[in-house]
Amino acid sequence: MRLGAGDPLAPAAPGRPLSMRAGRRGAAAPGGRGRPAGQERAAADGAGSTSPLTTVFLIWLTFLCTVQGTDHMGPRPRQRRQLGYGAWTHWGSWSACSSTCGDGASFRTRRCIRFPEEEMCKGPLRQYRVCELDECLPGSVPFRAVQCSLYDGKPVLGSQTPYQWVPFHGAPNLCDLNCLAVGHNFYYTFGRVLDGTRCSPDSRDLCISGRCLRAGCDGLLGSESQADACGVCGGRNESCVLVHHVFRAAFPSSGYFGYQNVTQIPAGARHIKVTDSSRNYLALMTANQRYVINGDWAIDWPGTYEAGGTQVRYTRTADAHESLEAAGPTQEDLLVMVLFQEPNAGIEFQFWLPKEHFHPIQSDASPLRQPQTREVGDGSPREHPAILPAPPSQNDIARKTPQWEGTPLPAKVPPGSSGLCGVCDSPRGKSQRIHHYCNSDFVFRARILSKRRVGQETRYDVHVLHTYHNRFPVVRREFVWVPDACDCPLLAEQREYVLMARRHVNYEHTLNRLLLPRGGYARPWTPREDLQLRDVPKHCSRGGTPP
Image 1 (cartoon, one colour):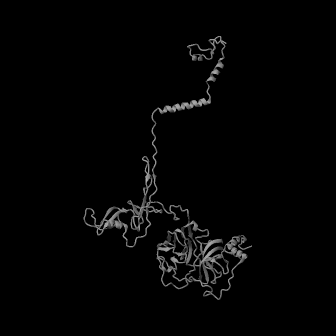
Image 2: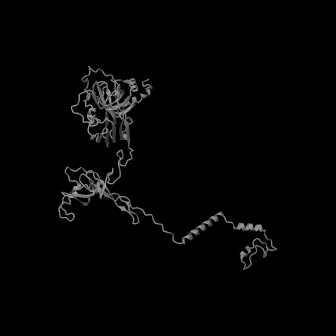
């Protein structure tokens, strides 16, 4: 087939650009066999379309060229490098103490390791702590006085007059070596005192580099660490509990006035505070029944007293405000009491107690543990008068010898008892155990600490170890009373027993105590007895009697 000159498929003539024929696309050559214009346009559009992959490639290429073009527009600003801090080395060893006795301080240092472009390390370069030293012997020269004496006989202020120097504590800067000229009315400052010098005679703070610093609970001077209410340095009061109550026992209608329990403060207590605002008097007794403050009908002067291994500060004002305060911790149980003279307006007490010392059976306001009754009107007056504040007057306190004094209990028949005590029948067997268990107010395991004869009764001081059943709260230390002096039931000291007792409240409501009847249930504690007791409650009916 021969292509004509007007055919679109004919080769271009020499010297004629191909693009010129493209411009005539769609026009058929005369006499030739041309294609319709619509078909030619469709073919052209198909030849010019691109695939999606090609489109993505073109977009990426355009972006790349744009970025490369901006690099030649000029240098970008240089970002400043963030400087870091150096690192501390470990602390060195502590230096020798600045003193050999009394107050003193030692220090330790560390180094900062850093690159030239890094900042200095954060924190102190040197640390100071208080030395644990023995007290200086009586007559020793204080450290500040030793420093002043070093300038004795040396010229001062251009004068050749020799002076003797002693410490002067009236200057504003406590950590300057201010020394008073003996026999003259001026003092001179010889720079700073040496590190470890006490800021003032009545302060435990020490001077370090011219500053008066106080030691934290960690022993470091200038530290802000403080002990919490539990005594834990830097703690959050998480290892102890706050016991806070108000004792509101009513004044008995019979007019009885004497000692009554307020609360028992267990061993380990801290931050103890007891307050009262009445004409009644607070009293304090130790675990061995020894009065410390306001005991035996004698009122003590306000002051500081030693009790339970801690200092107790007793205050009393003219407006009848009274308080007992102690930092603790106590090393033994303390018993807070009140000597009634008028109706009780409310005695507030609080203390912090370690969680392991706070027992579920504890009731801080339990009135059951009461010493022997001491009433007014019996006995003879004491030979020495009581020391009383004004107000109230001395006539407000009866200075009486107690009617019953606790004396060691004889073995068998005590003086004053009528005839022989007879045979002591002790309950035995399962039925007796169930009967006493269901009809008793208290069933507990206790250790007998001591026993005393009080009149015609026997009083046992017991340590409650575990409670099986109790209708009223008890404390860890209680008095158990037996209404005779015949050792029935027979309880040996330092032995452990299971006791089933009742609550005894007399008609006048002056007594509220634990009573173990003659022939009551008192069995030596054994693991077998413990197992049998745990099975008893299911036998008790709602009425409190066995089925």
